[in-house]
Image (cartoon, rainbow, N blue to C red; front, side, top):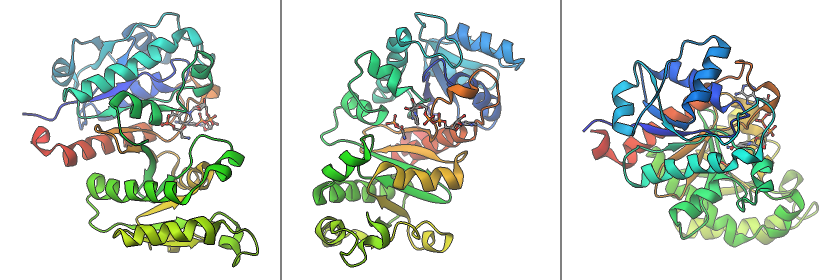
Length: 336
Ligand SMILES: NC(=O)C1=CN([C@@H]2O[C@H](COP(=O)(O)OP(=O)(O)OC[C@H]3O[C@@H](n4cnc5c(N)ncnc54)[C@H](O)[C@@H]3O)[C@@H](O)[C@H]2O)C=CC1
Ligand SMILES: NCC(=O)COP(=O)(O)O
């Protein structure tokens, strides 16, 4: 049996997702991994024509047909848009198609018809206006696949892997809701994810402090002794090679990064600023704790440059490659 293709979602059709899908196909068509887009073939064809890109788009009935045509044509399983997409101007009317694309990709992955799901960026604010009740893909995918615990967001590049313990909440709320139990739960999920997804037998996990100088022995905040140190002790008691809390301002230097496999960070920007600064075009967002493989580019919809053909497809290409690697590691029989 040959490796099944990956499913690539539409993302917000007013964002850069469409042109990234076209560019990713051009880069991967001969080398793979193969993927099928869950998108509107007419809008992708029109976009390719407008950009002057030679990307033949073809509707397909399913993953098998997609794998057969991938070298010559970009295969698309049709998800019709209710309204024409205008680059840079998101339209909530298209939200059902955006979400439908994700739902269909997940169903294909759960049925074992695709190796994993790769998502193009959605506009969270646009979806919230239509009543979307999840902070982002990560939590939506947890609900779609019925995970017992909330999934965990890992951002990964060859230079750095980071996980934020709190994700899409205000900084104030992140501080108010940070608990030892949540640090431990996230650390355990990271430990498992590094073993299963990356084959790292005994992952070294650096835990960030919250305050300047990791609290300066309590003079600049007490969260380190009160929340973080007990979490590290609990993780170590469960066999996880966790250490810290490290001063956040120096833990991302090249020297410091050489000492760990992933950094466990306490809030969104503590994790995402270093990785996007180091490797915006190579960073990949991976969801840990799902029964399926899911990756995505590390960036968003980039409405300001959408439709111009100048968006860098590097992060999406890296996301597709990583999803294929993870699928092969998780489902070796399907990849044989
Ligand atoms: N996985 C997802 O679905 C994600 C969605 N978003 C959503 O994206 C929307 C916009 O978020 P922002 O914070 O503005 O971040 P953004 O990543 O969309 O844009 C930030 C800056 O990076 C540039 N940029 C982004 N991707 C690029 C690429 N591939 N090539 C060249 N330049 C690129 C943009 O032009 C902009 O200057 C928000 O609604 C947010 O929720 C953000 C991150 C991830
Ligand atoms: N800042 C990362 C991000 O927004 C990705 O979120 P998700 O949609 O993958 O949950």
